[in-house]
Amino acid sequence: MKNQQHTTVSRRSFLKGTGLGLGALATSTPTFAWQNTIDVHQGVVATATLKNAGLQEQAHMQDQYMALADTLDLPIRTGHQVLIILGVVSDKPFPYSVDSKLLHASLMHLLAQGVKAQQITIAYRSEHDLQPTSSLVVSASKALGKAFKPEHFVNTLGNTHWETLTLPQGLPGLHVLSSAKHADHIVYLGQLTDQHGQPVIPEHAIAQTLLAADGLAQYAGQLDDVTKISVLNRAVFAKVRLVANNATRFVATTDTAQCEEKCVHPGILNISNDMTSQAVFARHYLSALHNNTQVTARTAQSLVWMQHGSSRDPLTIRLVESALSRSGVALKKVTLG
Image (cartoon, rainbow, N blue to C red; front, side):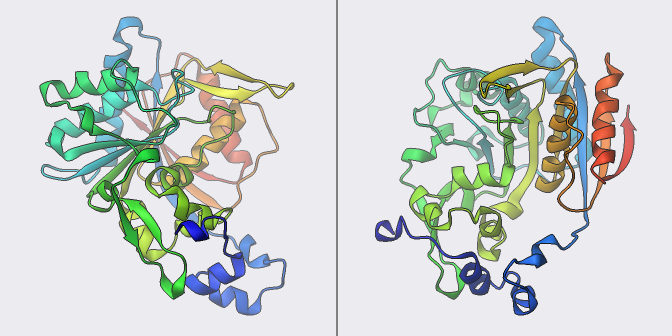
């Protein structure tokens, strides 16, 4: 693999090799106009208002998380192996890293479903291992109690436990995290933007965490297509049951290209059982908060938005609805409880 590390596969060769877009390639022009084909997506996003509850903030988030996850009716049950993937992890607290309260709420929900602590693995990718005193480790320890072990956390940057995936048509193979291949379910916990203020795409974050860097480098710029390869989809992406963000705060770029923390009141905890739905909502949620009227949907979307909890700032909800409407998303709103 190492001797191919700096080799990339052309998009045309990639698509021909995987069978993606073969029919389109046969009739397409060199500009690949087929990429603009309308793809109507139907998905569900559930959101909850997070109020500033002071010392009760953790309990409040846990209640909201439970309510939303139960509404989505996730197929996670007793005896299942679950892999939790943490999005951006750094030496800075939320929103520069995944919110530790979100991890705590997720673990408590899994335990409530009958999943045992020893059946849970938490994967992340970072230049530095999480220390025992880090907020994420402390939150996991509180949730799992005496069953918690440091081995619950796996930094895939220095990981040695990989399994090889052989791709079709002689495409370079990939190494996937062993615990991902053997997991029954995957839960992704992230944030709206990364440390540089760029929107986080769940599929990309998952791929960059669960796939070995040497193999992933061979598909630079083709990550969207890689995630659709059937053998990889079965091993990883078809197992993603839930994607969750705490959108109370996020990192944004200023007019001077500097990064600063933005705090939204009320914040929104939003989760989905579909990665595309989550990305659609997150993109237009950010659009609304930035008051950006130019953002449009890349493809046609039909989205069910289930809201839980009353907002102290109805304007925020109206802004998000407006942004989704301007983008062409067909929105169906359902109020929960």
